[in-house]
Length: 87
Image (tube, rainbow, N blue to C red; front, side, top):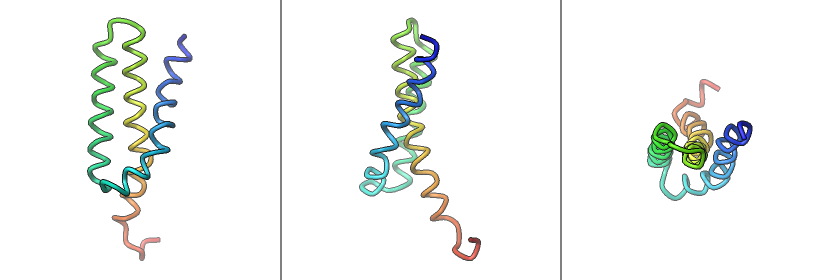
């Protein structure tokens, strides 16, 4: 069970990173970063307030969704901020 509690975080990140690129094209980089942050915070709150294993798993899954947004959107955003002469 300990391994599943750890792995569900990465599973959430995997699922969200697949659709995050499409969402970024629809809503933009900064709103997607904000949504990812809000989702990650919600997952952290659920993990902190969990009173049983199911709540902990749900919180880790939701936090993984937020990390999936971050791992997809932030590299694109940073690449846009850099000047071409720095490459």
